Image (cartoon, rainbow, N blue to C red; front, side, top):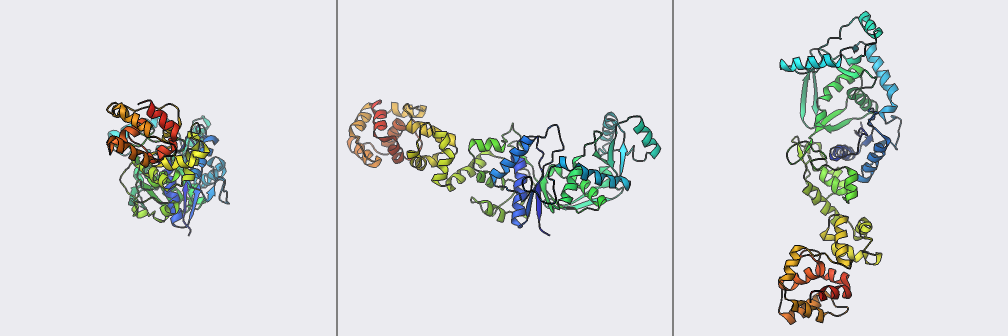
Length: 464
């Protein structure tokens, strides 16, 4: 059987690191196995779901290179691919469970259920439904309905059994059915619970492998029980570690998580994000930068870790630097052109990129160097001011007098060295500080060329 994985997000917001890593792992595993990757939209939360977020998540996946083989925009016979369009399918399977007595109405109120949970907690028992409504007679059920009582529909868990499955990441898992209890599959407002529709969709869409966060681990025995009751195929499940921040807490916006839209706007390369996330909770033999094919070829379920995956911004930026290194000058110019257009014209674009590319991570960094190299005014850092204050004014006067048109930087500095006796930092640091306002930055020969005779002369003259 061909491997088929899926990504099934709820479109209630922009996708972040956790969502994207789940999508990436499923994509990588499918491609490693020459299988298919499915995109399904779980939009049953009508109040929070929106087409805007659906379009945004598809745009983000496409930008990352995580093209799906089946789903939204790529429909096949197993659709539709939005849960909001599949209600009749869920109703059909619900009726089958009702016909076999595996579902029953529960009239317990929220307050009753809360009291029951508190009593169970005080007795150190797992929180589960007491089964109060499990054995109501037909007459009792009809009377309560006639009274207009709200009710949910609960799935009748088999008693005294052990639900086991081999987790692709965590090994053999076992759950006593009596500890789980009967759970809700349709709410009192008529909407279906995640356990139910998610399991049905995976079976009907022929998903063979489900990689998802470990926070779904306890959902799995419920879904296996449902699928067994309906006589439907059960996928293999693997529950990946959660991403945590530097303090070990779940990663959130507050602790540094950024949406893909925000990362794209900042200038991160898709391959930088993919190289980082593919190694966040997963080990590769190669520490080098990989394209999507290389990431897929090296992705192994056996290399998925169980420990929480710690997010570090510095590591993401490491991969951004490697991605930038792998990108051609022409593509780098396309990447940063919009940010520097106020200072850098097309004729200088290629040389500008070659000079500054090793000193930037993002287009905003290029913007800083564009101002340094092409603006009429120059901002000077405190460190550069210190260097300039420690340098004799005569040095800059000599530098101005020795400057000629069409002179390269090495010839120019050799003349200054011969005239002043300065060398090393004593020669180059004052020139860098005077010409760029910084004590660090791109190689000076390229800076000197881009500045040109007039701008070099003007900046040195002001200090002479």
